[in-house]
Length: 465
Image 1 (tube, rainbow, N blue to C red):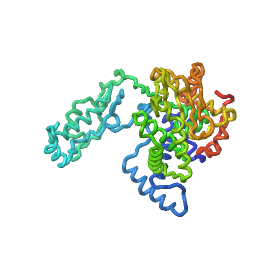
Image 2: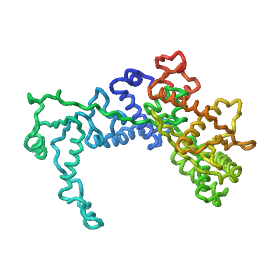
Image 3: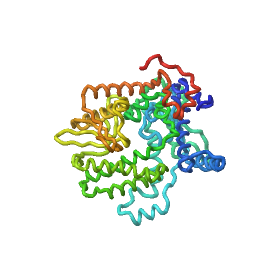
């Protein structure tokens, strides 16, 4: 990405031009293809021993398979008819869309049989219901259904276009010739297209989803990272899961789900160890990461300590691993709450951290970030369900001596301020305002895009927006 061959596609002109950065987004799509290839072919490092085989597999198998399968370029679902552009679509791609003007080609088409003898045998001899359509007419029905879809995409003007050919492979085919012969030729002197009142292209009002950790925090830390990994959707090289924390969360979730199923009597140390081992087997195969026995023991200690401390409070559980979203005016706010517990008409929110409890003074800024996250979860829960949130907690599963909790009182004014900040960041994202006062030096050493940024001609804003 540091070289002009590729970096030229990320200039403001290229990203904001007529094609809205299509070249950059195709490069992003290509990065995902490479990541999938490395996963499928177990490529972790490029070594001299295997480089010839890796390249042969990449071009002769992987790319060939994708090409034969008809892989397409990037398409923006939120803008199906970009201003100043002509959209080329297959009939199937056009389903559900409307355009003021539609030009339909492929008028050489003829009905073709698409079912086999086996289909007829199964339907005639083994189906409980009689055939919905006679087999000898299905190809005709399918043919006209297809072209009905094409013709009905037009709001104001439908143009039928064909290269006139006669004889074998005639165009238009005999099925369309009676229709075409009755239409006005586009060269007809009396045809005045200026008399047609064309409709405006309908705008797609698709709201994007935003979450605190994966969107807002990333943008606040580095708008340039956000642009590459969220807006353009490049696949990060360092995208490995934090398997330690994931295992702790998954196994604690198993405990909660058993309690919510009224199976608290089944939750024992032995059962927890069994859940942990099962989770590890599946997670290690998926992520291709493996832990030392001592690390698995440490995870087991985290989970068992949690159970032993909290088993008297488990009756207060209401929901676990709750995916919740709220439709706002300009976007959709979403979040995932680890645990909701409560009684006496109020609930408490708990977010688990698979680490030791931090120093409350030295780590004050990080705790304030977590507090903002919990405040958004409280806002989501109250707005979506009408429940009253009384308190919010961080639970550190690695704490073995003191209290594992860091608790926050719910304050309306703080929540309103956090939601307002969230709205402001989303507004910048929606406006594609990726300006920065300086490069975030702490993030740069481990960022995949650092070589691109090293060569970029920066235009830093004078003050934080």
